[in-house]
Image (cartoon, rainbow, N blue to C red; front, side, top):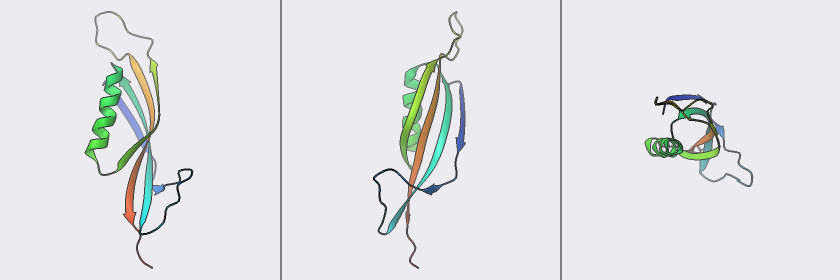
Length: 98
């Protein structure tokens, strides 16, 4: 990979359609926007796999838009793809009794 840029939104309660939390746990989510410059499509898959293995949060990929970069050719090693991804980092917290 050539460049990785990201932004992380503050953590909030998970609000997926059809999901109704309850009981002794609370599901929390932080949405992450990731912008990657890649040589090959497999670089994106390896990045997502590495990210999911490293932390405690569950990783849910909401979307990834991959587009070819206009530059390229010649003998130089340069990024050929740009990936814009939206990822949810989901954690589970115990509800504290009142």
